[in-house]
Image 1 (spheres, rainbow, N blue to C red):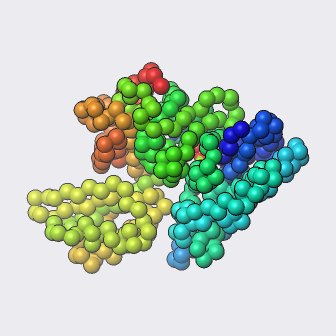
Image 2: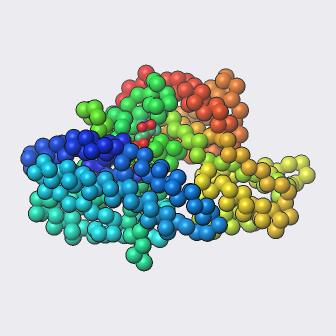
Image 3: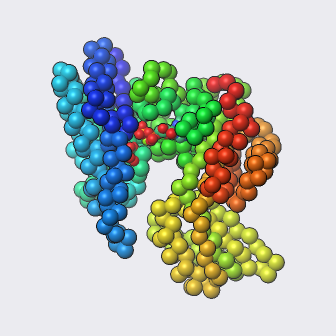
Length: 410
Ligand code: ADP
Ligand code: ASP
Ligand code: MG
């Protein structure tokens, strides 16, 4: 007998007919003697619909994140109740749980909250009564008792955190593709499913835009040694196991995957004095506003003034631009430029550690397509570039082919 946490994403619970199929699968597992805990997302594109609904009230001048979290969390409330009903209809005792009912405790960073702890008492009681808990993904409760959400894609994190708290044998993430691929299979036709991928690589892929897993989920699975697998809800198969580096084959491929996102925007403040402390004068007010800065480039010109450029999430672009204009006045710098039509493209692989020349190969491949690189950043196992958004797909395909990801083995 094993204890499994199974998470089903939006496409996997898009209709009640699909929920019926999940109920059948759970029924079979229960009969085989397994303990099952379910985590579900909102149905289909419901969360997008709710985001658009909130946007109809222009609340940008106030901090409306608490109330928008209350709204966004309703999507999962609908799917947990429907799935619990499907299970009960099949004769499987089930009970839905919202985040606060368990409780899933988070910090108070509304719209991007982090899970602090999960009370396991009610879930253990349900399991020992033979009941399948159906838990709402993506939501929790703040220290003051308010509804929080974990950021888009956060149901994966709920599942992994639950698997860690409940000491599950495996956390299975069921989605609409057959596992983790070398790149997004919806964009690059030749993308190949990986049999396994290391936590470290998966973390870099996820935080660079591969939304197949929420990056916080990968972080938690690594931290609490939760066996994590990504599988298709629609096609039988082994999926992808996320694993530690020691268990991987000795000769890792040079590059494991290509990740990308068009969800970032670039800001430049010109004519900044080249003096100590200036980077912090520019970036402190940005981070105080809870805006995360990703890539940074600073160039000193001949006249000792610098152009300071950085990227932020597209959603934070306007607020960051407003703040930067104020900062520019305060530090007597020049104009503020913004560009939301950019994309970030990253190649990831532990094999990079032992091979030189990966970056220059990447730049050659992009140059051969006539694609200009605007910014570059590197880590031990990742190289990222910022390019014009209109070349994103071309660049992803070129890198995928150029690093021979279609033909290398698992
Ligand atoms: P869910 O609703 O099940 O959580 P998501 O839409 O969040 O599903 O994540 C699955 C999607 O992630 C896939 O449909 C695919 O387009 C995208 N994706 C991006 N990069 C990758 C990758 N490297 N491997 C697999 N899927 C990827
Ligand atoms: N429903 C949420 C979203 O669409 C959480 C998730 O699906 O993981 O972002
Ligand atoms: Mg997802």
